Image (cartoon, rainbow, N blue to C red; front, side, top):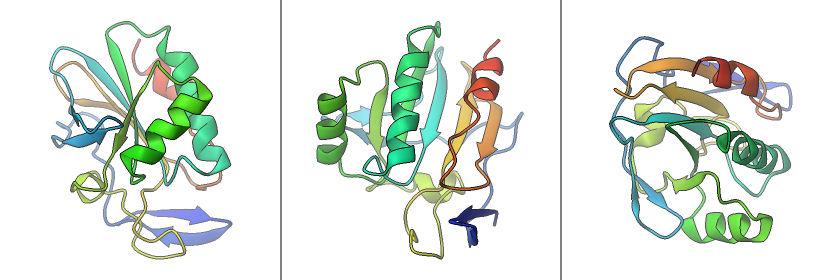
Length: 163
């Protein structure tokens, strides 16, 4: 169990993020078009994990990673929340988001497998803001549980891990 905060109040996750140097758990998420989204062997993956695309900081992180994605070679950025695919498609369409893959964890064990499902507080059941970066073999090369859910992740550290 790990701890982050929501509005300064500590909240707990179901577990811990996968550690750097370990093989990340496999995942199967739903794309905004209900297609299956997984880690593709041979491609690096940045998992931008957050509570809901309908909050300001979450929306900002999707927009920022959308900008960053264009400069990343052999890398897929997957923005993961428990939002329904309909909400993700609406947001991405309205904001012109096309450089990242929106993926819903609402039908999967992703939140538990990655240790990011919130188990208390008003966001209980949603995913804690975090970033996990996988190399081409699915090994974790960077992970960050953001200390305050209302804070954006460390984009620079995530990108630097890909160098």
